[in-house]
Length: 119
Length: 113
Image (tube, rainbow over all chains, first blue to last red; front, side, top):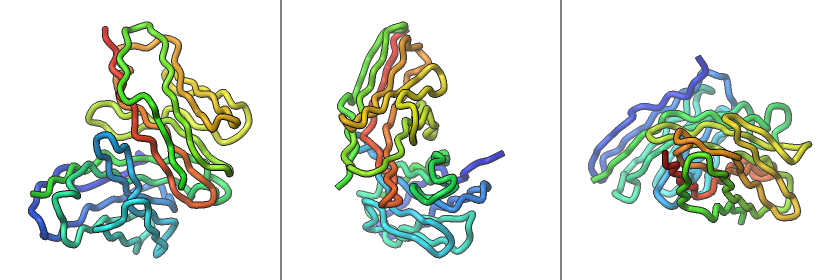
């Protein structure tokens, strides 16, 4: 079954304690991205990756890091989490980036989300 | 900067009422347009998408949307809503020049049985 898998689904942690949220897709997609969802603000893109070892900032990258060492995995790293990073996080993937030729118009597939609370 | 506006933040309708949710975007170039739905506690699912061709696109569950290029709009419609349509709806734009997706702030729809 085609899917995007995020772990953990829920996490409560404290300020400053490094954490990683994993994301894995089994569809051989090139494009992956991370979003945070906050009430009244919708989804905002944190980082995206167009392929292995190619990542770039989205609209709200401060306080986050990502890596793309393998095509299927795109972890989100919070080196020193702060309470303003309390949010619902979604990972998504699609075959290609928007405007990148064949299959670039295919929609994103989303993971089930990770609810992160930082005290 | 590119942006997507959804003017209706909360909508409450009775079953069988007609629905129209507004979506406007600001970008002068080529865009791909999407509507996603998020049922309570679930991830986003695609309702419909527009890339080119017929500006009236039909999606799942009886939803449709019309792309009006001159108005930079992509409004979502459904002739008769059901209680099961209660969800949050997001409009999204992908621009060919930036490799990014931009989402609107969402519209919470509540359908009363």
